[in-house]
Length: 507
Image (cartoon, rainbow, N blue to C red):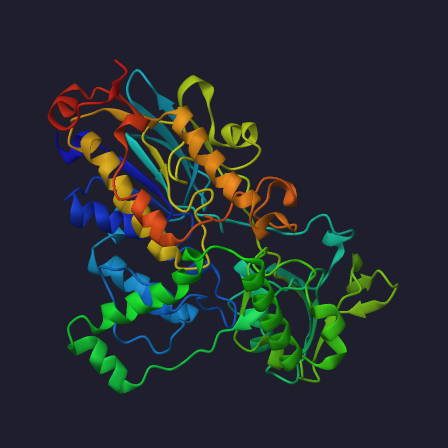
């Protein structure tokens, strides 16, 4: 069956969507796909999060595509402009731009079981014009950093007359010189841009912190010209460097957890904060929850910046936002020209309507299971030919790029029979999906993740839907190839006779 008889939709042209498109072209020789991107350029989070100081938490040689290693990264951790340029370059290299429909938001995808295809409705975000397309496979690459968590619930939120924005919507032309800036939030994004913004002594910054975070050191170590030459010219040098980074990050997850190890980690991070931060903040900056319960913030200058006279932390809590500033819960009114929300993202709501068999929707499935859930974070029962990248319980403290590449290899095996006409659709069964997620939640119940409120829990305190609670080595091992007995197939007689002896056919 030719490309023209099977169409694939990839939702999102960030690093996951682009990597999936590259794999379709290079590994399956398939070109009849479209990437739907709501923005005007590729890059996803690396296009959107253009705030000062934005960088990767993971060392960049493990945060790049394994098929396209790059020897000339400037530092151990890539900055946003450099990472964005890398993905633009790959988009050009693999001629993906003709496949991308920009400024287009996918609103819905509904499965027609009789025709074995989706009706995908998209909207031009500039004109409002809607279009319906027929596709046979949908791959969702919107990830979990899609919807900014903007705290509309703060009293007076809409009263502020100055400039206000979320860190993922940082205005390109904003000038903060001689401004008073309130930063609400102290997780990864806030800890990255606060040092950059406060470098200018004319900018007065107040960082409002509700819950302290754990910090560990993340030095941005420059690569020398010699190291870059070695990476570029000595075979396997760059891959060995990448493998060492992976081992260093993943090895602790291979060890059995112990109270002794947790105590040592807490003591080490407490000492790090005490040694770095001004003494006046010590009583407020040591979290009362275990290390690892929330995402540990990689410190690339935040704690040092707290010694600047134009930067202050405020732990009083926000009572109200008013026209020209913020009123704290102690009754103090602080005037501001700008409010920057470093308040993270909403992870428990899937951002569009996707409907499969028997009226099952993604959000409905999530709600019925107490929060986001999927089979290996990738497939959902009764939603045929639909696959998630960076789905529920796929996050790790290591490389998102590695996790998604493993998923992409897995997805390719599921879509290839459909693309070549050997099958019409595959959908994962409910029983193995439930068994897998029960295993995930049982593991999580014995971990530190249940000991604090988090964006990765339903309503902040419920089910933990992120992260993957094992080593990524195990992730790779489990997703090497599909267990076909866990899937229902339609129109797969020819494929089943050729490749399988144990598959349930639904005709």
